[in-house]
Length: 98
Picture 1 (cartoon, rainbow, N blue to C red):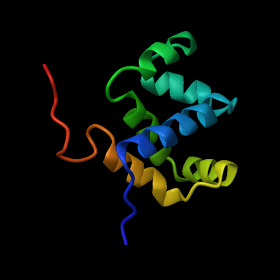
Picture 2 (picture 1 turned 90 degrees about the vertical axis):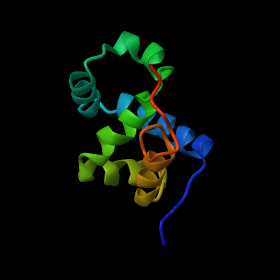
Picture 3 (picture 1 turned 180 degrees about the horizontal axis):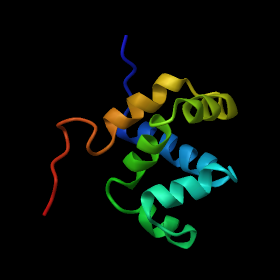
């Protein structure tokens, strides 16, 4: 059975994931390098559409990171994929704006 999350639940999980990434001395520099943002710009970037989706994508791209997040937070690893589907770009419920 596929897990389903509301947008609010997905955003909450993504914010927890961002906190997890920010608190990991090995993962944070990798996240900053991949995203191209500076540590000082994270708060501003977090308000941008799609940023939280990118946080989830970052974790999902590396299974050991998914498992570490799940172990640290008690989250079901499948909840990350469910969160990704509930956030912008995860399915066809969201339309790009120009």
